[in-house]
Length: 271
Image (tube, rainbow, N blue to C red; front, side, top):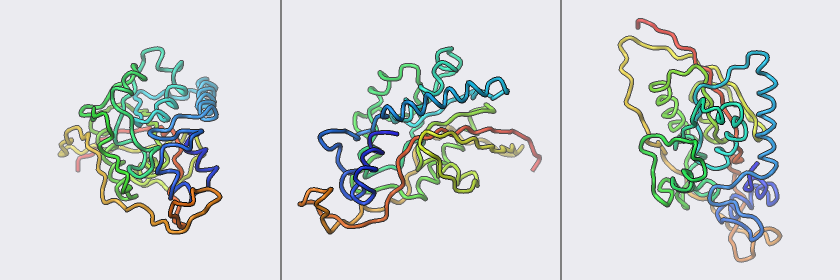
C-alpha cells in the first residue's frame, strides 16, 4: 500500500478521481509525484519475502531476472521482497523498464521521478537502454490518461522485448495493477484482481519459429489513444473544496503494487 491508496480510501473513488488524484497532496500527506510505500506496504513486501523463504525447502525456484517499474513503490517492493534472498548476494541486478510503469497520465502518483533520483536511490539497479534521463516525466500528462488498449500494447511490448532478449526460465516483474492487467490480457490470462502487495505466478509457453527473426530491443512505450480527464460539475463540500467543480465519474482502477513471476518454457517448432 502507498500513500495514494490511503488517500483514495479516505476520500472515496469519485473525490479521488476528480480532484485529489490531480494534486500532489493535502498538506498532511503527499502522494505525487510517485507515491512512496506506507509502513503497511513495506510490511507486505517483507511478508512476501518470508513466504518465499518458507517455500525454498520445497524447491521454490528463484527468479533469474528481475524487472521493475521505475516508480519507488515498485522498486521498494522488489528490494524488500528479494534483498537478502537475491540482491545482497549479487546474484542479479534488477532492471528498470519504462514499459512496466502504471497507467500513464492524470494522476500525480503516476508521474515518474527522474533517472538521477532513481540512480541515487537504487544503486544496485540497472536502466534499460534508452531510459529517458529528463528531469521531468516526458510521458506523463496532466490532461489525458492512457486507455486499457494502450496498456495492452505497452504490456505486449515488454513481453516481446523479454522474449527476444532474455533466456531466463524464471522472471520476476514488479509493477502495478493497471499494467499487470495488461500483461495478463496480453498472454490470454483470465482477468484476476490481486490484493495489494500480492504475488501471482504466471506460466507462459514461448515457442521459437525457425524462420522467425527476433526484433531489435524495443524500449519505446506504446501509449495508444488517451481518454480525456473526467468532467466534474457538482461540488461535494465535505471532501472537496467548494470552489472545485465535481461530478460522479467511473472510478479508475486502484493503483496498487504487485509482483508478477513469469515462468517461461521454451520449445522449438519448424513452422
